[in-house]
Image 1: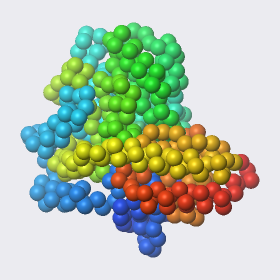
Image 2: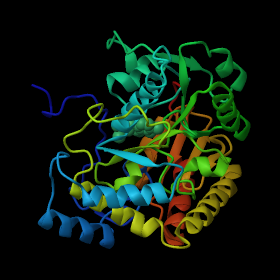
Image 3: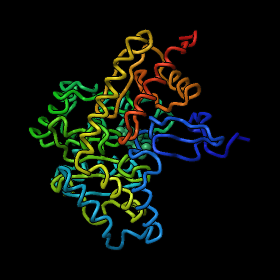
Image 4: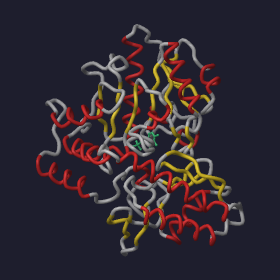
Length: 396
Ligand code: PLP
């Protein structure tokens, strides 16, 4: 008999949260954890935010779900706000990030199909990318650990090294539909695209009639201090997948596109039973109410700079363990000289601080966007204390 009836696909740790209060999670025995993981960049207003909670409670009692066979005043309202604040003209709502990426892939393929170039099906993606766990999105990453045993995968992807514009351009042929890229690789280790790289991809797309598809599932929705990370690169995509933070903890994703890029997505080409239901729309609208308040995103930038500065000040005291800080806004990565997964476990088990490990031995630091100085101080003090007491295992 398995220990739990849950399919054992996750290496679950001993933390068993039953309640959340702002930046803290509370376990079954009442133990408190400082949560700088935020459900992996999801709970961007922390836990139990009064406005988000009230709006969800109100909507649960009013109308939770209707089919997409009917008109959607709630969906139109949220889509209009997303359009008003982005490059996009049109929005498809999903329940997760992977589904938003799936919709982006389909939209890109249909664009070329509608243009009379159905052979243009291949999206060039990048090494160490992460786009989700559906068959389509694991096909879009070159990572063997996610693909092994799931073949045959979806054809139509090429893989170039991240931040290598020449290599990406060299892969283009008559079957190329465009590029699919995270402006900041999240799971891959908080690796920002270089401005030349992202701007270069945009230029190549414009020159060659290709589509730039951005995956902002992890880095979008205010996390980097602008509503979307691409704004800081001076680049706009044709299609973008967003999710995670957009629902503040409620499952919600969206595929945004320009009218031109979405021209193939006509009646009957796509759908989702739950996508865009009134409860999800209430969550998205409540999150936007908060993060679009004047000054909120500037505050995220300022908070990110303070947190980064404090971590950078701490590093010289523990330079055998840490190499540096990378990332943007409140999407930060502490690059380690040792196995970051073990340090994340140490921090969690002995100091009750939650972070997430990522590729390249990075500790992901993803606090709620509304954290205050007291939590920054507590976090840095605890990471410093944890580093002082940490003895890397002998087998490293
Ligand atoms: N894309 C990126 C960049 C992600 O970080 C993730 C999840 O971590 C996904 C897509 C998949 O999102 P979901 O797990 O909601 O399907």
